[in-house]
Length: 370
Image (cartoon, rainbow, N blue to C red; front, side, top):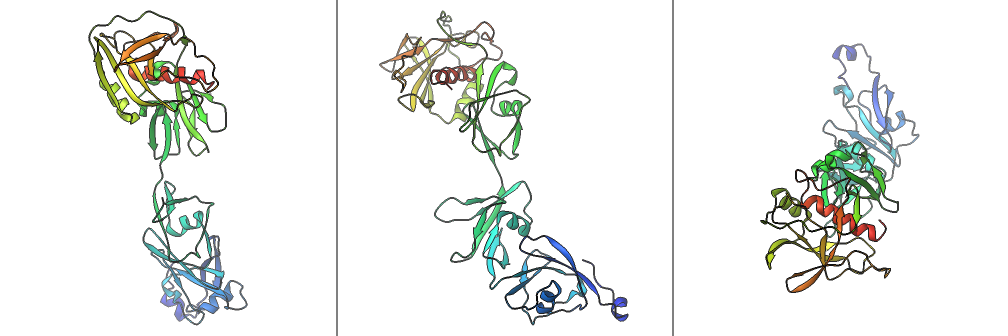
């Protein structure tokens, strides 16, 4: 809004254009003949027959809203001619990012808060709460301002989460390519995966590396990776030589947030993962998982996996090919005979504990029909 020139005032040209919004904060132009109108005149200019029960709020340059009483005058000669004029019997006070606003309605939406505070699209609005987590206020959510005290809102960068084979990514953008998600989670996208997107209440959906995932979709749970051509069956053990654990393995295990350790018992090298989560369908939710690491790993492949205590299905169906045994920590672990098929053999250049855990998850999920 530009200033009115002194020459225009001298000519008596006092007709002026102001911008007025209602509850929706959608502004429209309104003409007014007085450059120092009262609150009542402003209300009349937008069509109210009486100023009674009407709130006139002036939008100041810093974004604050100032209540203008019916008999109070406003100087429009300096261009501050933006107003919110609505029918209301009181004004509700709120703060957003520390800035105070007087709002003339009991109910306010997240979208209106975003407009009031000029909150950019990459930030979300939250209602601050003291004894519980702050409440996310989406654009279409409504908040009742009639609660005791002043409602306080804050904006902060929104984070979308995606579970990629047990690694939880926190992303600042609401969409991501499957390839990029695998790279961020520490997986080689060119490994040769069957990739599935799991959404709550839906069957798992096969996706490609070029698929874009919209993280705003309700119910997105995880990306599940399965090495191509995973078979149940028997295969010979890789020869044991020296024990080694790769840096990439340790970084991945740390990202999973599970307690893990490497131990040697009776000259056998083991990676032990405590409280490993299981998919729904087993009689327990977690197990102790062990991988036997061959002496010349990664030159030799990791074969199958071991669990303690033995796993059982809630359906009581017998799990096939679990005849392997290993004594570890003084107890007998049951080994699952699962190996890679000829279409996707072990490749020392890309395979490691990370890819073997993907095979483990696929085998566990297959038994419960996921």
